[in-house]
Image (tube, rainbow, N blue to C red):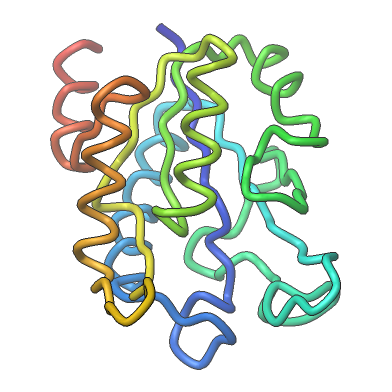
Length: 186
């Protein structure tokens, strides 16, 4: 098993003061930063995904804005690929698949935002492409959603998507449990 870390859309617009602030993004990113450190210390590949909104009417992740930049706490290292995307699925019209194959990655460790959108789309696509997927639930964040007259709280959105993805697409685990498992398996 050769794991690779995928950091999806950990960009400034999702943080306090950004154009699409998420619930729990700070805590999720603190965990992600620790996970990134673990991968770097163990010389395992990491891949940063950056969403650039090109669709008409987009309100966040706009090209050439501070909001679209990767958050400082998880900045790509000199050897970390930065892959830009324009769709929720990180594989759609990007070089991600080839980059993972070239790095001989067969198990994707996925974290980032938003749980109900880009994390969901990327995890399902990765599994459909034949990758084993490990989704780090406490390294992901989302937001409150409205459906008709109902407000769905971010915690409920996140829980529902983690439960759905754990059924057939990914092993869903916390970052501390993931690191403990990796340390036990060398």
